[in-house]
Length: 149
Image (cartoon, rainbow, N blue to C red; front, side):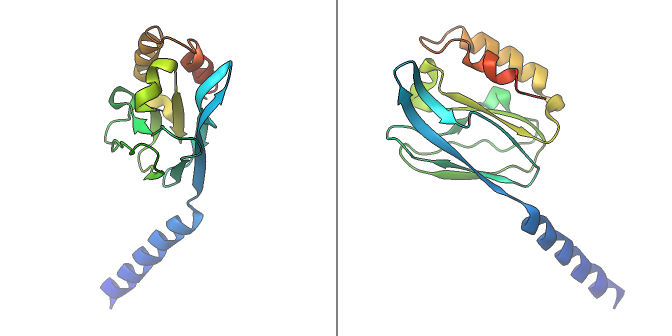
Protein backbone atom coordinates (compact mmCIF):
# COMPACT_ATOMS: atom_id res chain seq x y z
CA UNK A 1 0.00 0.00 0.00
CA UNK A 2 2.86 2.37 0.83
CA UNK A 3 4.46 1.74 -2.57
CA UNK A 4 1.20 2.60 -4.33
CA UNK A 5 0.91 5.88 -2.43
CA UNK A 6 4.49 6.79 -3.34
CA UNK A 7 3.85 5.91 -6.99
CA UNK A 8 0.65 7.98 -7.09
CA UNK A 9 2.38 10.93 -5.41
CA UNK A 10 5.30 10.70 -7.87
CA UNK A 11 2.94 10.70 -10.85
CA UNK A 12 1.09 13.71 -9.48
CA UNK A 13 4.34 15.63 -9.03
CA UNK A 14 5.41 14.82 -12.58
CA UNK A 15 2.08 15.99 -13.97
CA UNK A 16 2.30 19.25 -11.97
CA UNK A 17 5.72 19.92 -13.53
CA UNK A 18 4.15 19.66 -17.00
CA UNK A 19 1.25 21.91 -15.99
CA UNK A 20 3.64 24.71 -15.08
CA UNK A 21 5.96 24.22 -18.08
CA UNK A 22 5.61 26.88 -20.75
CA UNK A 23 6.04 26.86 -24.51
CA UNK A 24 7.91 29.83 -25.95
CA UNK A 25 8.06 30.78 -29.62
CA UNK A 26 10.94 32.13 -31.68
CA UNK A 27 10.42 33.39 -35.22
CA UNK A 28 12.97 32.68 -37.95
CA UNK A 29 13.09 35.87 -40.04
CA UNK A 30 14.79 37.28 -43.12
CA UNK A 31 14.64 40.75 -41.52
CA UNK A 32 15.12 44.05 -43.29
CA UNK A 33 18.02 45.86 -44.99
CA UNK A 34 20.24 46.61 -41.99
CA UNK A 35 18.89 43.85 -39.75
CA UNK A 36 19.01 40.75 -41.93
CA UNK A 37 18.73 37.10 -40.92
CA UNK A 38 17.59 37.01 -37.32
CA UNK A 39 15.68 35.11 -34.68
CA UNK A 40 13.01 36.97 -32.75
CA UNK A 41 13.42 37.06 -29.84
CA UNK A 42 17.12 36.37 -30.18
CA UNK A 43 17.69 36.01 -26.43
CA UNK A 44 15.17 34.07 -24.42
CA UNK A 45 15.17 33.29 -20.69
CA UNK A 46 13.12 30.24 -19.75
CA UNK A 47 12.68 27.76 -16.91
CA UNK A 48 13.94 24.21 -16.79
CA UNK A 49 11.25 21.97 -18.35
CA UNK A 50 9.97 24.66 -20.74
CA UNK A 51 9.91 24.16 -24.49
CA UNK A 52 10.84 26.46 -27.35
CA UNK A 53 9.16 26.25 -30.74
CA UNK A 54 10.93 27.85 -33.68
CA UNK A 55 8.38 29.16 -36.19
CA UNK A 56 9.21 29.02 -39.91
CA UNK A 57 8.03 32.58 -40.52
CA UNK A 58 10.25 33.22 -43.57
CA UNK A 59 11.69 30.54 -45.91
CA UNK A 60 15.19 29.02 -45.98
CA UNK A 61 15.85 28.90 -42.22
CA UNK A 62 16.29 26.28 -39.53
CA UNK A 63 17.35 26.10 -35.89
CA UNK A 64 20.36 24.02 -34.89
CA UNK A 65 22.20 23.91 -31.59
CA UNK A 66 25.87 24.88 -31.48
CA UNK A 67 27.59 21.91 -29.81
CA UNK A 68 30.31 24.08 -28.25
CA UNK A 69 27.61 26.19 -26.58
CA UNK A 70 25.54 23.52 -24.85
CA UNK A 71 25.52 22.76 -21.13
CA UNK A 72 26.99 19.41 -20.14
CA UNK A 73 24.35 16.69 -20.54
CA UNK A 74 22.09 18.75 -22.84
CA UNK A 75 20.70 17.18 -26.00
CA UNK A 76 21.61 18.83 -29.33
CA UNK A 77 19.00 19.57 -32.00
CA UNK A 78 19.09 20.16 -35.74
CA UNK A 79 15.85 21.30 -37.35
CA UNK A 80 15.09 20.81 -41.03
CA UNK A 81 15.02 23.72 -43.44
CA UNK A 82 11.67 25.56 -43.61
CA UNK A 83 10.19 23.45 -40.80
CA UNK A 84 9.18 24.24 -37.27
CA UNK A 85 10.94 22.44 -34.46
CA UNK A 86 10.09 22.18 -30.76
CA UNK A 87 12.78 21.48 -28.17
CA UNK A 88 12.32 20.77 -24.47
CA UNK A 89 15.04 22.15 -22.17
CA UNK A 90 15.73 19.87 -19.20
CA UNK A 91 19.28 20.99 -18.33
CA UNK A 92 20.05 24.42 -16.84
CA UNK A 93 22.65 26.55 -18.59
CA UNK A 94 23.24 28.62 -21.69
CA UNK A 95 22.35 27.30 -25.15
CA UNK A 96 23.69 28.82 -28.35
CA UNK A 97 21.99 28.08 -31.65
CA UNK A 98 22.08 29.20 -35.27
CA UNK A 99 20.49 28.92 -38.67
CA UNK A 100 22.80 26.55 -40.52
CA UNK A 101 22.86 28.29 -43.93
CA UNK A 102 22.98 31.80 -42.43
CA UNK A 103 25.37 31.50 -39.49
CA UNK A 104 28.01 33.43 -41.48
CA UNK A 105 25.53 36.32 -41.54
CA UNK A 106 25.18 36.20 -37.76
CA UNK A 107 21.83 34.40 -37.59
CA UNK A 108 22.28 33.18 -34.02
CA UNK A 109 20.43 33.16 -30.74
CA UNK A 110 20.74 32.33 -27.06
CA UNK A 111 18.44 30.41 -24.72
CA UNK A 112 19.05 30.90 -20.99
CA UNK A 113 17.63 28.05 -18.93
CA UNK A 114 17.63 28.89 -15.24
CA UNK A 115 21.17 29.62 -14.06
CA UNK A 116 23.53 30.04 -17.06
CA UNK A 117 26.75 30.00 -15.04
CA UNK A 118 27.67 26.36 -15.75
CA UNK A 119 28.81 27.10 -19.30
CA UNK A 120 28.56 30.88 -19.64
CA UNK A 121 32.27 31.67 -19.91
CA UNK A 122 33.14 28.82 -22.28
CA UNK A 123 30.14 29.64 -24.51
CA UNK A 124 31.02 33.32 -24.59
CA UNK A 125 34.65 32.59 -25.50
CA UNK A 126 33.56 30.32 -28.36
CA UNK A 127 30.94 32.82 -29.57
CA UNK A 128 33.39 35.74 -29.65
CA UNK A 129 35.84 33.70 -31.73
CA UNK A 130 33.14 32.69 -34.21
CA UNK A 131 31.63 36.19 -34.38
CA UNK A 132 34.91 37.50 -35.80
CA UNK A 133 34.57 35.13 -38.78
CA UNK A 134 31.14 36.35 -39.89
CA UNK A 135 30.63 38.37 -43.07
CA UNK A 136 27.72 40.43 -41.63
CA UNK A 137 26.11 41.42 -38.34
CA UNK A 138 29.41 41.34 -36.47
CA UNK A 139 28.77 42.26 -32.87
CA UNK A 140 25.46 40.44 -32.67
CA UNK A 141 26.66 37.76 -30.23
CA UNK A 142 28.39 40.47 -28.16
CA UNK A 143 25.09 42.35 -27.96
CA UNK A 144 23.20 39.19 -26.98
CA UNK A 145 25.67 38.22 -24.25
CA UNK A 146 25.08 41.59 -22.58
CA UNK A 147 21.52 40.40 -21.93
CA UNK A 148 22.63 37.21 -20.13
CA UNK A 149 22.15 37.49 -16.39
